[in-house]
Length: 331
Ligand SMILES: Nc1ncnc2c1ncn2[C@@H]1O[C@H](COP(=O)(O)OP(=O)(O)OP(=O)(O)O)[C@@H](O)[C@H]1O
Image 1: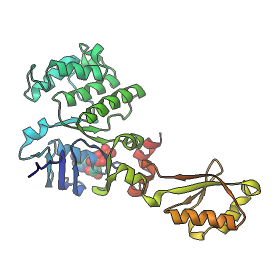
Image 2 (image 1 turned 90 degrees about the horizontal axis):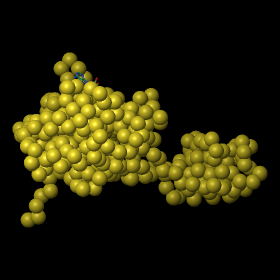
Image 3 (image 1 turned 180 degrees about the vertical axis):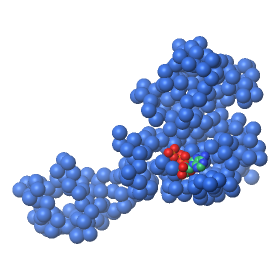
């Protein structure tokens, strides 16, 4: 029999009811495959941090199970923790240690010595180098800038060389240089087999890096799919075109409106560049639009089929137009 490949992370029917608080997770289930780059997205209050805390063993689920590399986070917390590195949102550190001391101390927390092949001094040096921290190795934590402290937080999560990494909004408020350094390193670790789970309010980062994306809303999964599939959800595609010749400009728009099926034009939009965008859920609709325009004596230029970006899909699925995550995504 072929060996059964357990998922890197298994979340099964997880419910979290805070005492005197909301139902933060209302029965969430999904698996993250080994080696995946997985996005966990959702507007503020969706339950992402609650779920990460449960995965990290920092909070208890009211019911349900979580396993990291096959180890139950409640029944076998030591092994589960050993297989997991979490980069938290908040900067917490001991101001009296240097950067290197901080990392050595964290390594000790996992019961690992200097010569452990997974995370000896060589690995600490490699992590420092890849996060551009080598020149700060002997600096005191309290003397570091916010961006440098964030790098140390990432280094701490990697110090025991875990096969699964969770990054909880790692780039919130950090500069472009750190983002690039961080993504280069994380992408490399992922190429080398590390499973990466990312929450971010920068949806273009999720779009660029995540193989699959789960979207949470009010403690429920509202989407779980390949990023490409989500982006190519047929109903989200739009046909963009410009009216050519005499019909170009505002005067042509009523003529296009008269030519096109009313249910399509009801969802049409005139873009800043003057092009008209209409929903294009399938090839037949595209043909119909072009055919009707021709019939009305109109010709179309600058034709483009545009699929939604992750931000549009996110807003459609989470229905959270005023949410700050969407604001951040637009920034
Ligand atoms: N310790 C707590 N006690 C009571 N309620 C809590 C606690 N922590 C979170 N909540 C509530 O649980 C819900 C989910 O919150 P959570 O922080 O997990 O969401 P989130 O998706 O991480 O949001 P954000 O993007 O703002 O970080 C929210 O309604 C929140 O107010």
